[in-house]
Amino acid sequence: MSIMSPIPRRTFLAASGIVSGLLAAGGPLSLIAPGRAWALEMKVLTSSQGAALMSAARTIAPHDDLEDAAYALVVKAIDAAAADGHVREMVVSGLAGLGANFAAQTEGARVAALKTVEKSEFFQFLRSSTLANLYSSAIAYAHFGYEGEAFSKGGYLTRGFNDLHWLPEVPLQDSGPGVGGG
Image (cartoon, rainbow, N blue to C red; front, side, top):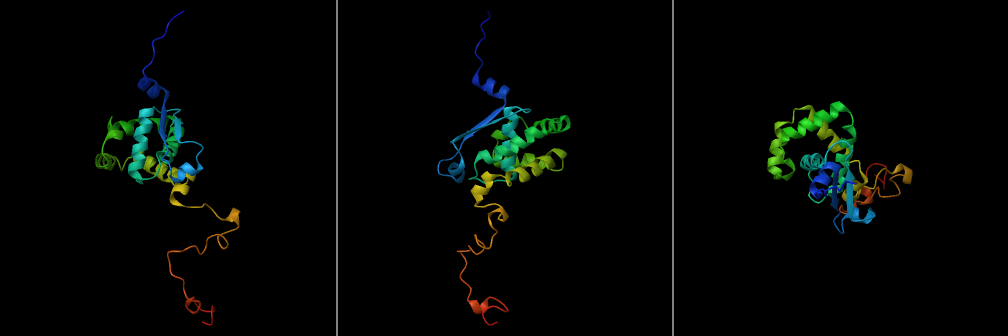
């Protein structure tokens, strides 16, 4: 019987490929999420590569008060796409080109690093993956107040079509031709 030495937590997390975080209390996501903690298991990429991808996605589409869990969905999609050998090589070499400590850099340094690779296939893939996956998630919908498509809920006419409370009411006679005597 052999006794295994304990694995340091950092080594375990890097090898297991887990990216995790906490949700902000009182944020829109905390209202729909079952708990405050989230974790993303990486299938192909490492957790440090996942952290770099999350920082890159946050730099490409910066929303300071949007939960990291929304950006984790981008990382999850890229990790799934990296099951393809070409995509994996492109992502791994692209992240290497950004530098080993990309995720820990200031936003200005991350922007500068991304600008150096913005013409590359890697950046174009990263940008399109970020925009497609970030803004089509329920997390982003909740954050930005988007209620989703309306067809399945009876359409917009009876549920918010005229919810522009920040605009003054328009008098009926000014509503256009054929309305209110015009």
